Length: 490
Image: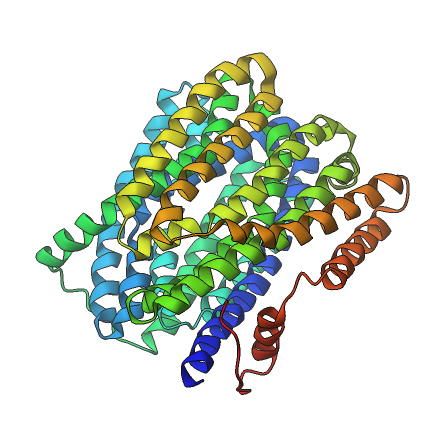
């Protein structure tokens, strides 16, 4: 019984850490989406396309500053916290060098692609944020390793509130994209400064360069760096290719839909960030807990992502018209296709952390190379012929391919059984019923549609016993963390 209680405590910590990160992430993302919507309306499709292009380039070149080091810090310090000062100091110095190289590379890449001089200047300003953003991740990794995820979540919300507040004010005053990029850069600098100050109260970083440590860490990190690079290219290359092949207006229309998908992706992203330290610590010490978290995580990701995909699919045109206005009506069909990526991303997001914990980082890189190559190849065909709809369908096809590859690899490693499919039956039935209702009341008020649809889905989950005894005990454990009791581990 003691072992089962211990497993429950670990699972409850995952849930609580997920909740903390998710609340912070949702607050930040809501503010971010408000900014995106207002920027899209104020800047027009062309200006919004330029803004989206710069942010996409930042996302790609950020990987060169990250180099997979944040994941390694979290993994290693979750097992041994005594080396945190050494890890932080050396990773900080690494990222100082990497960010300078990545920033220069980003500016040269935009110039080489033949974009206007104004875009090159905007890129140079944005490149300054790479150092701050990468070391925000360094600080966050240390806090996450100790399962103090509420601290970086709180700081992130503060920085986002300031960035969004100043950006909205600037847009209202008629500011252009350059002002928005400057505000973004300064906000990342403030976020790093706050996290570093809070971290110093807990430890004194050791900035002594250790060449042997660098060699060891970089050798372990490069497969993750490649995997992250391939993953970001996989998600961002469509925007870069649209900018070159279809122009800035097409980028604006596509990103109006894509940004809504990115908002929903915070669910799997923050959940995986929460489970990673616990999964890493339990891999060798408690294999039963290791498998328990996987099975339950897959179930919860499906339950959470399926209604979002179905709901947005049913009401896509209403969402676009209300949020962006009639100028972006061409985004609605792309949004329907892109939202189905959420289900695949959510389920598949559990797989990568498990491969990392098992020390199989190279497999992730290999699988993502195939997915990235497929994505780029299909985009070269689809974008010139079908525009933003071609880019959306390529994203979905690539995600299906990516998910199948990961599941094939993990099915043997984790001894997965076909009976896990039963977890999907209830969410599918509940989601289909919700979708049918939303299509039936298509002309009702949008707010009422959303609330009624959510009520129908949750009610059906409960009536059809989508939550079993283990789920109910887990939820009770999260709400009453000091409670103890027996549980069945399934």
